[in-house]
Image (cartoon, rainbow, N blue to C red):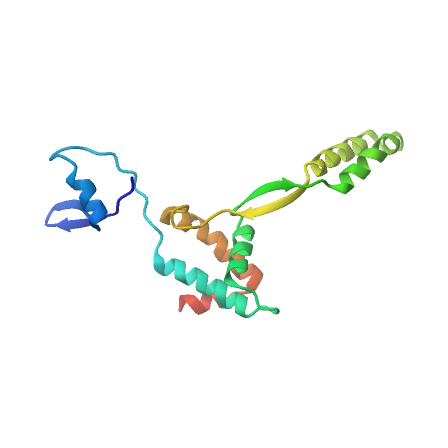
Length: 170
């Protein structure tokens, strides 16, 4: 069960207070002095989230043809290395190379034949598809987003230009 609490400081005391009815109800069920385990997950800043998607929207508006913010977001996550790799389908090149390998191996140097076999094995996995990892608030904490941001920032600058970052930082 997840509840939202806010940190408060009064004089020398620090505590956590409920931020909504669900959190109040959960805390009401605890006896005085009862301990609970808390897993701290700071949510991302809504301001930072809006800034990022504003940048994506501005980049998309300046593409020819125009692109939506979602496609820019996906591209940036992939460029930033925030993706998973899937292999799909059959690679026709691997099938073709497998059929000629026995003949070609006879005339190739041994090292080249081995390299060709390794290439065929790699191609046989199928086509590599990079699927952007999620960045939804419940999938990526504030700390994880902070660690990811420098690579997204770099991807924006290298792929689309400095003006999108400077424009938002001002």
